[in-house]
Image 1 (cartoon, rainbow, N blue to C red):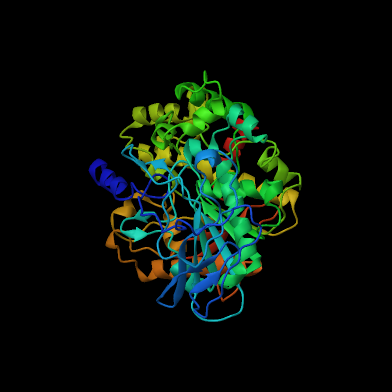
Image 2 (cartoon, rainbow, N blue to C red):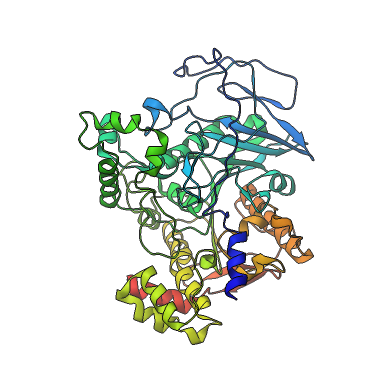
Length: 540
């Protein structure tokens, strides 16, 4: 089992939470074509081509293939370089002529799994897909990728497929799909006091501000691409799901989207003290703490130095806080996000929240026996509560010590946090809330060994199950079509039901209804209730 599972982990080592793909940079605005970025409006010439679309900054020319029009690498904000590094995204300069929007832009700078710096700071681009026919405005689905706020990109290639390519989702769902880049790691989240002083605004949360800028771009421009700006679904997975939920609580994101879908992400943010402590450590490690002008010193650092100074790490089996990510800054995030939502002060909208059965399977290494299980658990959650957790998750209740470890780390981070998010939403708003639980194990191939692991649902949502040349079964194709149907109907109407699909019951107070997503789709009530009650008892 050790050898087979290790091989399976290698197969998906480039999945959502840990993969980085280096892509070429889309041709940007050429020399001499940019006008002043401060201009509120740009002069944009028209075109008779259906592939040339006018945005508020200039025209973009896309491509068409298999009945879907695509525009890639469309700028939604100015490159955050030089004096704009570690600042809120600024308006992009105007450009003349039609910008070629035919290739994905560069990923935002990050360390790949080998510790190599990839990407470019000129990365604030988005991509759009829409069906080639029809003129009636379609619902819009804006996706935020995962990667622990450290890695990932819209052009991510996993097992030979571009996982977030929106063509299939746009075509089968009859929607407009948008995917967004945002700043990562220390470039996206450094809460440094010197940076705050120079900007006269709280530092950090630049990644969230990038996502907000992209949503503003959608509100202004998506109508020209055939989208309906009044029907915008924001959805994300892992770190992207975290950000989606946080933006439901953000006052400056109000009115920018009308539905939200949270896939495998807790609605949590670090406190200001923790975030600022990490920034102080970064400043000292970078050698800028003694500079006369600390902010200028930080902005002058080479990007390689920035990324390799106190790099973060992704560990979804730990209950600790990551070094970089969203924090409660008093502006973008006014206070505890779940508290804001539960108090009815969040951005009111229909919401879907869900998780996968074996989220941690991608990250937990082999646990051969009970002693190794106890040690791994203590390393993941700390020794103080290990004995209680071992009693709740005994090896004898699972097929193996490894399976027990996966369950004991999946439940608190994902399964039970989903229930807590649903409960806060029910308490704080009158809009409908829906919960799903994805339990499908692939019918064949190496991925089968990992169960319903973190990110597996994305292959179904985006219709790209042929990773590693895998041939999906008829049941898996049907499950993918069903999920695309639920997701796209929710984007269009705020209700995932319809189209003859199995009825998805809305959440309600005092119960835990959900939709089970597997080869057989069925509604149920109560997802690992005893285990989640246990975790509530530890934190309550």
